Length: 365
Image 1 (cartoon, rainbow, N blue to C red):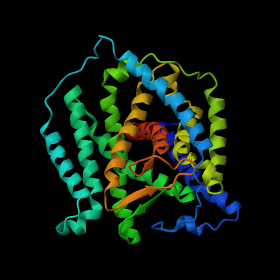
Image 2: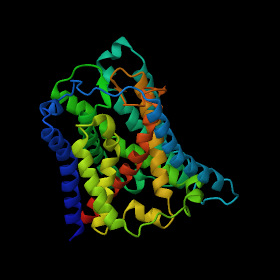
Image 3: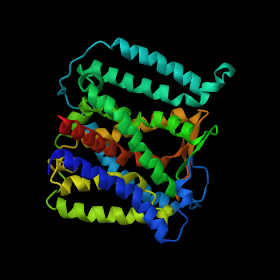
Image 4: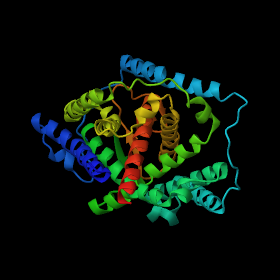
């Protein structure tokens, strides 16, 4: 099977599972499906479970058990005297321009000037376009290259890919309603356009931030020779993972309080499982050799971007708020502290989706 055919097959299966399985589940459960097709989404029909100290402690211990050793390893390894080779360049002029537009957008987003009232709900996109350019300028200054200058076609293709990618999460959120939007009322066409524009910045922001992190000593020295992952039975595990993901997505609308984490992990599980079943290189293969650089940089990049997303959202006019079952407490901006754990698999998802975009470009050559 050609690379192009494998790409098309992965997209069809991924879209079919993400879009079809939740609807199949609620249909079999006798739940009306029209509520999930409302556009723009406004109806609140999920009753979220109240805070539970038991769930909070279990989630916290599990997250810390994975995350803390990972960070400690990087900190210890980066203390040595060996330096990672890098080429320092002046901060480019286009980076300075983006820094100015970003700061101006930040002021406009958090202020309520009467003369700017008509554009006030639309300040999020300029902030993130500026952020992306500034991050690329930082990468260029540090290493002499960046996604914008070295892979411009790939970089530009990330924007429409990102919009489609995030609309999948918006769709899955219909079944769990972990976040909802506040702000002006829009018509369906206005809502689609004004939402698609900021959604298009997600992949470029995370993958550009990942590139900066990959050039740091923290990543290069800490995770080049890390603990290898056992990949001996990857294909059987991939088949089982695909089956579990399908079953979980079918139940996400029936038991949203218990299966809501699948919103964040199911796309990653499906893509990696399909890659393994098609004998393609996966992010787990890299980790199988002890090379955790891309995985760790991806996770941290999403977490960094997540902090900026939540911070800039906090005082914006058009914004979102959360309702997370069992653990909705100790908010940092609008996000409960344990909700930030969702950014960890999300970073890996951004990387594997970026890999799909690269595969598309290679198959077109």
